Length: 69
Image 1 (tube, rainbow, N blue to C red):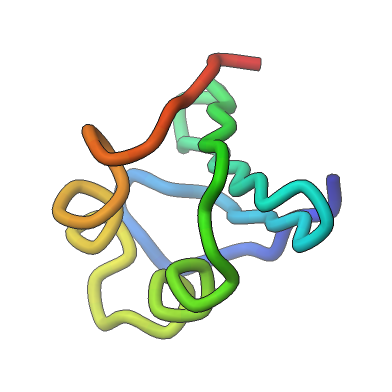
Image 2 (image 1 turned 90 degrees about the horizontal axis):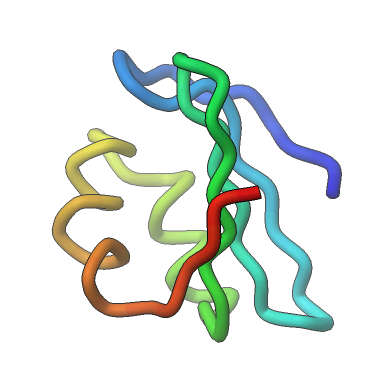
């Protein structure tokens, strides 16, 4: 999945596959997680948020199934 770099103290890049509704997060420590059944609206809100890490913590973690890649 292609990811875009983001400005965050904890997140290096973010990718999204609209066909499978999969959000992919690469953290600065090199770990990569995929979150499933994430709407495109949530993805757009994430990449456009003032705090990518804050949005991830508040709106995605704990709300969506995920897997470490």
